[in-house]
Length: 615
Image 1 (cartoon, one colour):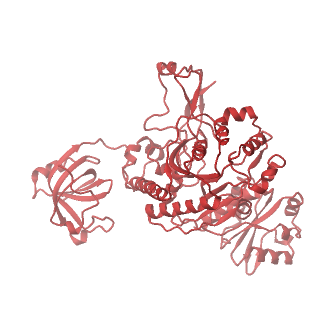
Image 2 (cartoon, helix red, strand yellow; image 1 turned 90 degrees about the vertical axis):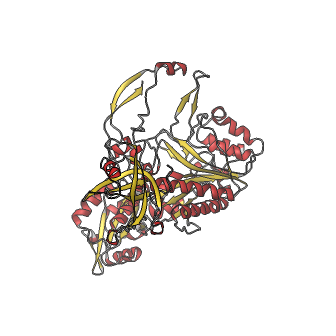
């Protein structure tokens, strides 16, 4: 018999109706000879009652029910006694008194609890993902993901975008991470790569006259994993012809507004603030600032240079920086904890020390205050807007170290003050990035993002003369301190693209071999174009109040890039290797997985793995 209702549908308006429900047994309880079963499906729970006065036969079958049995039951909807209402459930005012029960499938005792109240360890959840996905929380995550996909397609269709699929088997090109490579059986000795992004193809689509393109692209990168990174992730990939940066901003802001409204009914304020890269580093110590709170970095170098504190003066003499954060109302933190836990935390990011002062009774207190004349202290109080019970933290070092250490300290203070609200969404555009960065190890210029970003007009003449000064059109979209997206207007003139490739050390021959099909396409009238790649999994994770994208991907990999549920990656037989013209020469090496870089959410260190490595 076909079910008439889901397990989250029946309410008081259905009292007296006959209903057929199907689902899994969440719990079965025997209260004085009457059995109560919580029946669960993807939509919710309904309480089903088996009373021997109604049907002894059905009651006898119900006595055999166990957790996760799949059943079908038919009965009449009735009101629960008012003192038995469950306000936490949509169906909490009714129950179904069963007169027909059929066991559709039995289940062994589940290896993990299928309950949000008792969540299994990360290892077990990954191993038994098919069962973990039954939990209401995981079903909710998948629903939000689904709604977000529908919102994307709805909005971009209204803006005249074409959804076009680009190839999964592509040519290997340098894009910042390792490629996954795929051997070609019919072309011995040659390999495809799995796409890190559709970057080249979407630019060619603009050359092809498609004008506005998007896809929900699967991107694959062979890189070290963490909670916001997976070997395969989904990207909202977009490209537009005849646009300027402001056009891209307008489209993306409208897209974000639609996604959040349709997925979780959150109203996003637009336009998003725009912060130049240099300003982001100066104020927040990072190019992905969290704007849910203040606690900005304050440069006090010009003030403390007049102090007698040798540590600060020596750093400033070497063209370093001295910056401060006012940790509001944090004066209760003990000196022991500051000089232990907090100083050690700053040291993790390169800081050689952490100076501090507390504001008490209208004046600064600390073991180093004696080195600061009264007029310098007054200037510090004014510059930092210090009030009673505030705690000032100082770091003096090279600008890069100061930004890194204070940027992370800023987040630690925010967590201490409980300022990170998961239901608050603060977007920002970070703009005006450098086109190149100097690689100290390789002693050469490399793209700061990728080599296809158009330099700003006023910097084009500096590409070969002074690469370090070139500012490009790259921009990032951030949300709550997480980088969601990167984009730019693209280089569409072959002569500019060749100059950029020359700076990063690509010869004309190498450029032709790696990117010849793109450079060739540009010779036949490439329109001005630009676009963005948005991390879809990260958006969904933040809407679900987590930073762990594994929580919103149906079948993720663990941090060793493995799927414990299906056993991938796995060895293949000799016949398959021979057909692909591959001969293995392997040694077994025991290696511990790298510690996970956790932003937030669950983590597990995992067992030591035996990894086969090619000689």
